[in-house]
Length: 169
Image (cartoon, rainbow, N blue to C red; front, top):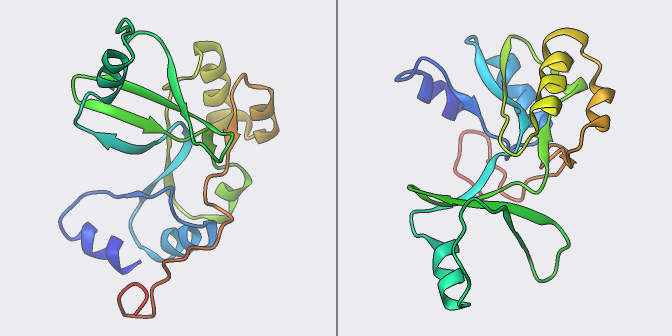
C-alpha cells in the first residue's frame, strides 16, 4: 500500500502486480483513494532479457531461426509450458497460462481491468471482452481454448513486509 501511495505522487496511475496475493490486492485497491489498474486477463511477462536467447540457442543447436514459430520452455522439474518469444527488444518468458481475475473483481472498489490478447485467438478474445464488459459470466472463460491460471492469488508470499518496515526484517 505504501509503495503505491509513493508511486502515485509522481504518476497518474499504477498497475497492481500479478505477483501479489488476492488479500494484498484487495487491501491495496480498497484503501487507496485513487483508481488503480488490475491485470484482469492474459499472458503476462515473467522475465525479460535484452539478449536474443532464442536465436542463440537455435544457432547452438544448428537449427533454422524462425521467430514466427511458437516456442515454449519447460523446466526440468515441472510440467508447465511457458510461452517465450523474441523480438527487437530481446526475449520474454510469459506465465504458463492466462492469468485471470473473476469473482475477485466483486471484492474490489473502483479499479480498471487490463485485458491482454497476446497468445489468445481472436474469437476467444472476443469472448473474454464480452465476459468482462457485459455478462460477468466468468464460468464462460473455462470454455476458451486457453490454459487459465490464478497465478499467486491464493499463495502466501515468503517475502512479507513488517508493518512500516523492510521485507523480512
